[in-house]
Amino acid sequence: MAKLERANFGTRLGVILATAGSAVGLGNVWRFPYMAGENGGAVFIIIYVVCVLLLGIPCMVSEFIVGRHGQCNTARAYMKLSGGSPWAVIGYMGVLTGFLITGYYAVVSGWCLQYVWASLIGHLQGDPAYFKTYFAELSGDPVKPVLWTVIILTITYLIIEHGVRDGIERASKMLMPTLFVLLLVIVGASCMLPNAERGVEFLFKPDFTKVTSDVFLGALGQSFYSLSIAMGCLCTYASYFSKYTDLTKSASQIAVIDCMVAILAGLMIFPAAFSVGVNPDSGPSLIFITLPNVFQQAFASMPVVGYVISLLFFVLLSLAALTSLMSLHEVSTAFFQEELFITRRKAAVIVTVATSVIGAFCSLSLGAVDGLSLFGRSLFDWFDFVTGQIFLPIVGFLTCIFIGWVIPHKTVRDEFTNWGTLRGRFFHLYIFLVKYICPLAILLIFLHQFGLLK
View 1 (cartoon, rainbow, N blue to C red):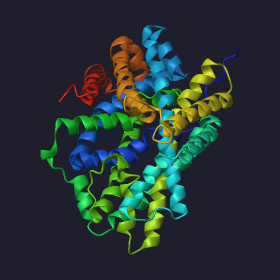
View 2 (cartoon, rainbow, N blue to C red):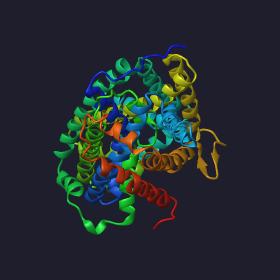
View 3 (cartoon, rainbow, N blue to C red):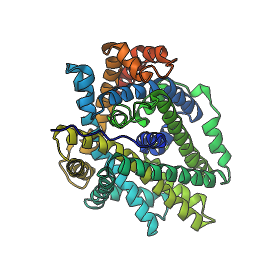
View 4 (tube, helix red, strand yellow):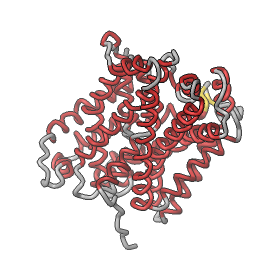
């Protein structure tokens, strides 16, 4: 069988926007604000930014090196770079992780679409108790969440089936600028509310007495979560990079975009929350229960503005979810296409159908169907736990060991410097971080989340 020419991103802008879209998702717009709210605001942000710069970027570059060197799906890329040794299992774990995350992540993404629809038809109105009841009824409904899960996966399929340039890159060039514009509009509206300065102060005036090991490790974990590290996404996208792409520069630009979106998400949420006296540490319920009520109260004197802001917010959430779903879907699509020797369309159909089934069961496990739980956890919670707290740290840790200790440094340097055409002034720092600091940091996260490190 003749070898097909590998697709590539067409422009440098396409590389940055597509890969940034992989990193910028619900982790930034949903998880980051409530993590910052629970962990002291400004001090959490400072530690988070430091973690992204010193740990996130080296891990991103490592995945870029594997992906571009392999020029194939994540599993085969690790196989090729390892020479067929047992280290190739890292790639298969990455693909499996991305595949499983796609299924349950689509459920949360579907909730975002439901909230867009509910906003459009005027259902998101009422007192705080109403919003809590609304979300409980939605997540426990046997039909609506499953329907929205299938819808957003179908939208993702329609993008992925068109390939790298006409699908992923074109969609990223439309979705990412739109996401930024929506962010800025909502940030502007939020920061003009009465007492909004308290929310701004919470985000930018650090209180270092709040620094604890929990805050530090929480910021460290969030930096890995929000950058899509160890999910196969970065490695897969890097396989579409050209040999001229500056991996370090690209990783740095993506990290800056990631931090900007996370901080803007905080500016979007906390000024409005403080304006109406809502506690910033509302936790995971912040987005779907607390914020609809916050926007309604904050713009009570201008109900039309409140309606528009609420609608735009959930459109923003949906776009953020979609950009991440694209990269997660592509991990498995590329794997099935290349390992089964089938067309991209057939591979995308397999992934869409399979993850729709996973998503449906995860959704139904939240209350619509009895028996979809084990040891007190729903199927949804098990997928989240196994992928987020076990697979991601293990894949990230092994990737650092693989690049830092197993692969010849000359091979790593060639990719890092684009075969000597770049100076590579930070190469030794990069190797030091990947060999020692990053594995240690990931190990600390892993031990801390199981209560083994206090």
